[in-house]
Length: 74
Image 1 (cartoon, rainbow, N blue to C red):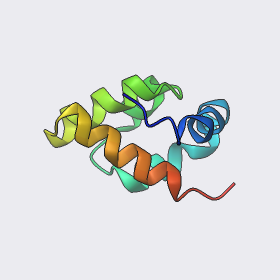
Image 2 (spheres, rainbow, N blue to C red):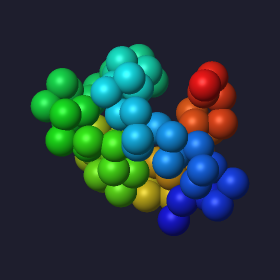
Image 3 (cartoon, one colour):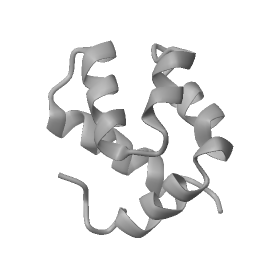
Image 4 (cartoon, rainbow, N blue to C red):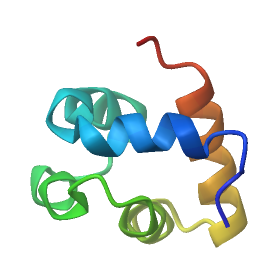
């Protein structure tokens, strides 16, 4: 489940997804352009794509997303 502290940040990411696709691609280079397009700012889909591409558990994928989101500059 999403960290409640990063939920407001994720709302911003989701709302401006097209602006953050490049950042996502930098952070998770194994994700394809198709993967990133399919995510469309939906955190649950990003979690699944990270799990699939990197073979990590859901909790680890969420931790990575939280850490990434905490470091974003708005």
